[in-house]
Image (cartoon, rainbow, N blue to C red; front, side, top):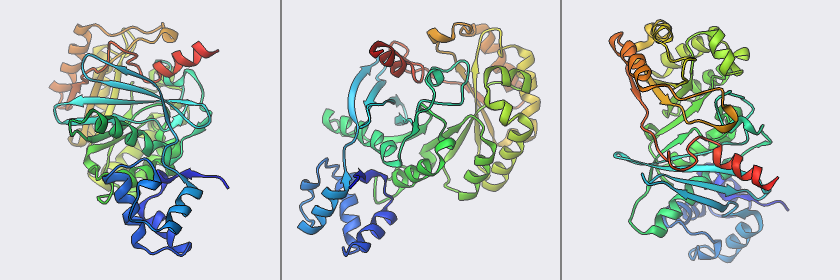
Amino acid sequence: MNKTSIYGFTLEQLTAWLIERGQQKFRAKQIWDWLYKKRVTAFSSMTNLNQECLNLLEENFYIQTLTEDIKQESKDGTIKFLFKLQDGNLIETVLMRFNYGLSVCVTTQVGCNIGCTFCASGLLTKSRDLSSGEIVEQIMNVQHHLDEVGQGERVSHIVVMGIGEPFDNFNNMVDFLRVVNDQKGLSIGARHITVSTSGLAHKIYEFADIDLQVNLAVSLHAPNNELRTRIMKINKAFPLEKLMPAIDYYLEKTNRRITFEYILLKDVNDHKEEARQLVKLLSDKRHLSYVNLIPYNPVDEHNQYDRSEKEAILGFYEVLLTNGIKCGVRTEHGTDIDAACGQLRSKQIKKAT
């Protein structure tokens, strides 16, 4: 019998699973309390369950499927975890400290097929999707680390921006969101969760329709098709003519602000002309738009790119701001460790080959 991660079950799914096997409905809430409130790591610790229920859990589920391979700690408090999955694959998870709380960036796939030319995540193509349980367990492992440190801290925010394209693993990603958002579990507010996509337009429509109330970020990185296709091959499948109507649908359906991620590459997409084009692209949706300008973290394998000069970043920012586009420059975290997404994983795999 193949076991699976118990973290992959929403409360409703676990309830139905238990009832089908002759267990009482309330057992699911007891199990969730042990997992997410008391945060035990062994079924034997669930002392108010009867032996029959415990045997069912032991026979069918794992609690822990990830093992910590490397942990890098930055001077600014950022911690990057390299976790090993049961099949030996490696994934990254990052804990970041902000004045508003502790945010965790999770991975949704082993590798990435999107192929953005500036990104370390795509150096190794996707080998598989993560299960919803493997995504939830990243949060739980970080929370267990915080529990061990013993300062009473808890994960308060989540960004689904790690390795992989979340919308390419849509159903597992949605189950993950339902688990971490559930008030009977981790109870992380929907407004404290952000999902990022490189622009899979058809999934943006679907995401709008399920109305989870979580935040959406779109990796834009260029204001025109020619430039965006050059740095993001996904633009061939979903050019701006397909992407922007999907965004309009999302805004109309949810009335929620959307964040546009824009990584600044020296002498590539950081000129004032590109800034003016971006203003034009977003002009009809500026009331629900926010542009996050991102300083580039150099990656050895992408040596065609350099970090934009401060003057260029400031000039770009001022063009947006003076034309009514809300924007900011992302605060950097973990610059003294392997800061770029996928960088630590890529380095470790190279060492092993």
